[in-house]
Length: 135
Image (cartoon, rainbow, N blue to C red):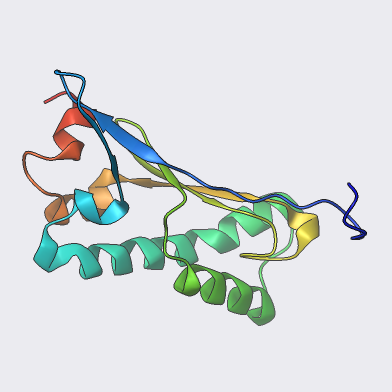
């Protein structure tokens, strides 16, 4: 690592694509999964769930309960995120956060799984969600 920093760093750049039956493909964002009028509410629900799950992951990594300063890191990191670093499977989203985005470098990268169930009422019908679910 030649940048002169104390340690290397990690970043994520995720691109999600849909490939249709006739081999047409296009890139999509998280907003493409939700009803237009509901997208902000869906994003807010996801962010609340991420902030709610962060102390559990912190405890699993450190064996300690998160203090208020830790909660401040989590909240600021999630609230400032555009949630563009996500992957999908048939059950839901996995959000990826690099070191420093949610906490110190020593705690590394963070991943959180959020089930489609959390935002089921906001998902577009006849959309990417149905393709993923195989419906």
